[in-house]
Image (tube, rainbow, N blue to C red; front, side, top):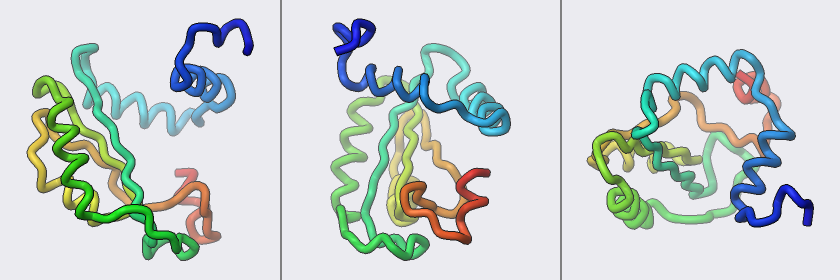
Length: 136
């Protein structure tokens, strides 16, 4: 155990290591800063996040394993609704399935839903045609 990790929970250690090892390009950092400024303008604003993997995404040819089902998302939506304390809490959903994103859009989260438009890609399973989109 390294001294600076003492007393930290696993998630905080991972976050610290990630921030030390990886830096966004100037372009991506500017886009992230603009997104945060728009959707989280004060410290009272919160972002509740979920990443839902179903597997077998048609835009990811090598993704052949089924991991979850669309029917299970109802439990996640209910959980996120219970965690939202006010209209200042936005919900951010990422998924390998456009159906999951559409399902989330049907929900009524207090502060609204935030998603990222565009083609669904998987950074761990790059395809030659996706390389530019993954780095955009």
